[in-house]
Structure formats: C-alpha cells, structure tokens
Amino acid sequence: MNDTLTNDTCTNDAAGNDAVGNDAVDQILGQWARARPDVDCSPMGVAGRISRASRLLEKGIKEYFAGHDLEPWEFDVLATLFRSNPDHRLCMSDLATAAMVSSAALTNRVDRLVAKGLVHREVAPSNRRMVLITLTDEGRLVVDALLEGHVANEERLLSGLTGEDRERLSGLLCKLLTSLGDVGSC
Image (cartoon, rainbow, N blue to C red):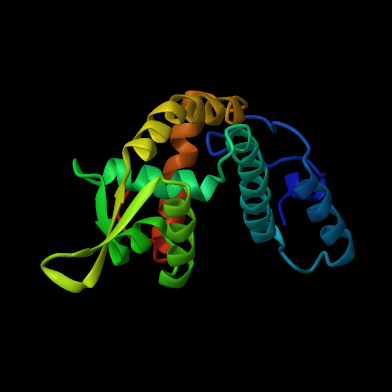
C-alpha cells in the first residue's frame, strides 16, 4: 500500500497535488494497513469514497426535493420525460431504461405520479401492448420550476471541487461506469 494510505491522509489527486484532507475512508484504510499490512486495500479507498460521496450527495438532493414535497425519483422520472422529446412522452420500457429501474418499480412510480396529476398513462393507439407515459401540464411546470434550484443545489454540494476537478472527476467516473458496463461513451 502506498505511503499516503498508511499515513491516514487522502491520496494525492491525479495531477500530483498535495493531499487535500483526511476523511473517514483514510481512517478505515489506516486501520486495514495496521491490521493486514500484507493486503493492498487501496481499491477500498476508491469504492468507499464513491459509495460515501453517493450517499452524501443523495442526502443533499433528497433534502432539496423534500422542501418541494417531491422525492428525487419523482423528479428523475418527470425530468426524463421532459428532456426525452418535444412530446414529453415515452413508452414504459424506454422510460424504465432511461430511469434505470425495473418495469415493476416503474409501474409503482408511475401509479404514484398519475395520482399526483404529474403524468398521464395511456395505451398506444397503434399497439395496444404498449403503454405511453406523458407529462401533464402540471408535471412540466414542476420540472421547469425545480430545475434551476436543483442545479444550484448540486453546485452547492460540489462546491469543494474546482471546475477543473469536476471535469477530471466526471471523466474518470465515466470511464469507470463504462468499464462496469454502463451504456454510452465518454
């Protein structure tokens, strides 16, 4: 394991800059280095930081939407419909793929959004086996009203990183996601 891990400090960034702090993952890695110095636990540093950052970002995002009586997944579905095409409509299977949820989970989510009057569900006229989900006028208003605040909240959550840091991190995360089988290219 490298010296930065055994000294319980954040590893140097990709540009070789000095360590930027001491986080909980450093403490865990330091404990592993003492308990099992024969095992290189550095992959835990990357996976652990991604996991912890994800939870903290999700918490901040959830708090923002809670202030607007909305769950993050509700906004995700509405935003997916909003940005997908000018009709703001997708079939269930395309929406499930875009929202990265199972069809069963999406059915439950759509039921809840229909009950709130944010989406409309209908059978496709050309194919009765296809179900179309469309944003209602109210659903479009919700996305429009919350988008800028959502982006500002994410800006606040990422304020510890410079623009260059974000660009580099985004590229590295894209590379990781595609290596794990995520669709698309960086």
